[in-house]
Amino acid sequence: AVAGATVIITPADATPTNNLILTKNIGGVPTQLTFSLSGSNLTLERGSSGAVILNSISVTVDAVSFKQDPADSVTTNFTLTTFQGGNPASQSFSTIKYLRK
Image (cartoon, helix red, strand yellow):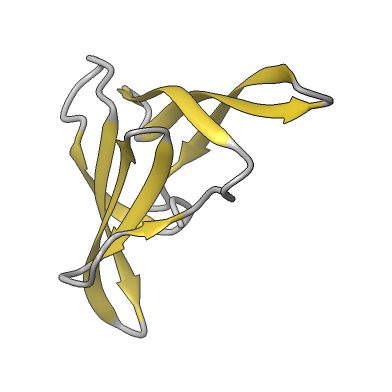
């Protein structure tokens, strides 16, 4: 969803935040997309529609941060946790997506 975004609204600078708001043309219509952490769930809200949980019930999301980089890109960091045999198994991830202008 970040690929093809035309404007990053939040974060406005290099200060990490726990939500990402951007505008993307969907079907030729500029649409605001909001990614945010709600409890232990990562959610996506498209326009004025309600938020949709992106992770499954067996996976929790933690330590989400979004940071806009100077080169019109967004760095996303997050940790996923699940339980295997009653023991937690966690993995941290990081990704960078660039805006197409």
